[in-house]
View: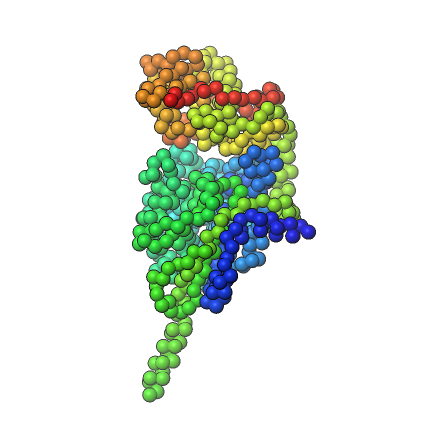
Length: 306
Length: 249
């Protein structure tokens, strides 16, 4: 009974909101495509329990139990799935004030997260405590634009990680926001912020050319965009000024996007950007279909969006 | 002939060993999914329970709110911002006066520091943690009139409901403004005592007018704790908008 209720709920929410025309499904089978699903969150901010039922905006929404159920369900549908997060895992409920982040990380382990990145609030208890609590994580926190040399995080944070899922190579790297003005200086002492554009170009080139990644994902805590000043570094600028990135999973600005947007990169190729607001209320789901043919007739053939 | 055959076999071998070039041919752009269900998950519950039990005392009711108050319900002020800034001003001014025998002139905090709504009905400490999770402590700075002008310009350009108390500003269309501080007309020749948080004093949210003040007093009071003890004493909480900072069109 409960199971049926769950399925009913899922169907009524927007998972199947986009109905696949039958013709597409057939084509998919005949072409023998490989399907990789990317599930993602951002800015969960220690929201472990669902919102109370008297909350005026999200009554009963979110919560780790519901998120875990949903991830389990979707992973059963497609085991070839990565679960990613774009930072600000911490700070927002007493669970962080009292336990310093360990419960958030243990729950993310259980939900089979594969990677996250450092949001500004990851530093709220200072770099030393961050370094200690990160030992609870069984997945990587990725960042390539903080110079962490001679800090406790030096050997703890990887620039990128490559996942091989069903023979598909997926390169994931992380970007953080400039911490100045967002975090007290003494809490992030010793960290230099580096220009995200140049580093992203280098890293994505390395992932593409040296490691032959089929899919390149950036976990970004830069923010989607800033209406106050369009020149402030953000995901939209990052997408336009770089190449080789296929998907930017964003955070920081708590932007509730309805679905991913497609923008053009430096080479006029498509980049997807998505962000799912905050507090574990929504989950992003993007399915990439890969050709398994050894030779591709037309390298520049258009990607089909469904 | 033999040579050709070897070359052919080698070519086939090399070709088949080479990594397949997997190209993205199709992407499904799904709508983001809302997370909500009420189905149990024993394994997750097992992880949460011991932690939740340790913070159970935070669920005790400490007061009541007459209505739901938010930081987002007006332009340059808000019901929740007014409530929080007024309580913090009143309580911290009392402490400041005890030590320094003088009054704080006004208070300014930041919009981004208020993370949640205060819902109608029972208030718990847990609610206060979600509204103000920070470790920030009450801090008083003495700044000169020019820095107060910078502060007013900041509010104008940010165009956000930064919580304030005892600060009244009317911004006019011709870019002029009328400013009253603690009931008296603002005098740019005067210095002012301003209540804020240590985070903002240290340049947080680019409030640079609080940097290098003439005097700096840390009250060593956690802002959330001040709110909690006030609500415990007061029991019923009421707030309203009063146009303390507004644009005159």
